[in-house]
Length: 629
Image (tube, rainbow, N blue to C red; front, side, top):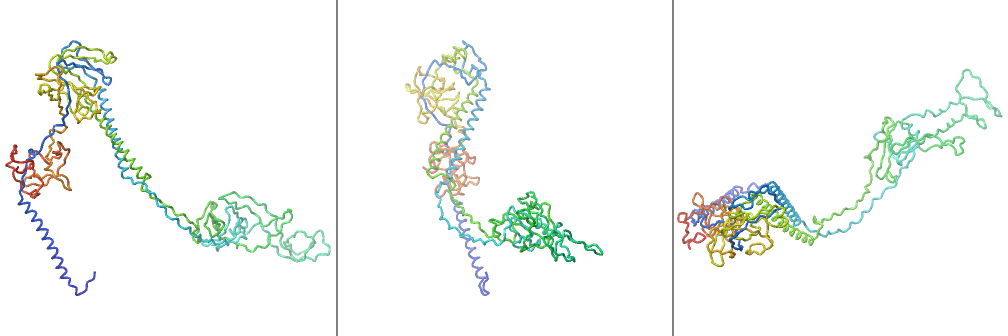
């Protein structure tokens, strides 16, 4: 940009610098004000252990009965092979004594098979979810808008052919252009099966026909008599001169006659090369139809000059030299190539062909990338979602089957669950045919609880776990230890469960032994509470939700740092329990840390922490947010 000579450039520079300085001062002032506010602000904090809880797993309720004569029965299993039995009928056993050992090889194969089945179901679910995503991202089919057809262009008129079309090119054929040079050859319009005569070829090569009879030089002859003689008279000469003996005629002539036309040469068919039989015609005259004397060819209007020269032979569409070239070949009489028969020349640059190609404009229809309508896509998406739900159930079932197979492998050694006597021990075939147990241990001391648990608790509730039972009759609580969980689901569902269990799922019978059975009677009904363990229950922290806030960066807490000030610390969270506590999955927070309530005017990043020394485990007088009650 060119400025006038008297433009006040110095004033502009001063103005710009002043504006920049003002903006910098404003930013600095805001930063100082914010930092000053944070430096002077004080916020109350709470120790994480006071506002968090731990999760030991879900509870499940069921119903059972107390019995004083518990019997342990083992039924044959076709899926398992017994490798060894350690007891015999009549033996006395205690809880924990080994009864038999299953073959672990087959059980290990079963586990591997279930693992493959679970992977297969997960893969099917993954593929179905990808297909759903693809369907959801597919644009529906849109009826294309067909444009109005454009009017057909008026064809360019083609000039009429001015060149003569040859099927046979002789020394008298006239090219339609050219000078016979290599740069500008003679050009002949011909058909695809056109032939070249011998006369033309001799002209092309610049060679005189060796069979042509030269014209004789006229010599004096005696005056003929009135009557013709049978033989010509001899004229003595000093030296013999070559004479030409004319053909006998009806009357003698006094003037020299033209040389007679030689007898016609029979034409020879040339081999077909590149569609040309170029030696079909080998004569210079034609015979009359009666096979008599040769008839002299009429004097032609045009004769090619003696060569050598260059000629080009072209075949055009519709035999019109103004239309595109179909094929052609070229011959140079001064240097004929041995393979010229097979050479096809391209369209010469000096031939300007009219553009007669009128391709119809192609119509491209954009269907939106799909051939499905919006209604069809909606139905396909709904079907795919239903399929995904079914596949999710299949994945859960496969995981359950795998867990059960692992439990069977872990429990390959069967131990006694009662103190008693081996009442019976029969062979497996007999037990299988009668659907009866092959090994029975009868206990005679203590009380046992027999109840059922939901299949969703398999793998979470184990032999050795403690359950709590309460009696309806005496109101007492009893503690019992699980000594057995059945490998087979119950045949019926006559067992009570709370509403958290799926009524369509299977149940498995379990037995728990009550150590202190004071007040219990045989057959007494009991309410039983099961505690399902969680994988990371003892390590996870579940923080009160009110102390967690979120912004564009994610969820965070105001955690006290080493400088005794609170700072925004981002965390990873998991599931919610009891509708009030959120699982902290990251390692950025421990029970010993302090956090501030992240709402209010004093909840500023950098504010000074207050109350770290006063906080105690009793948390007297302080509500869930760390504020005075």
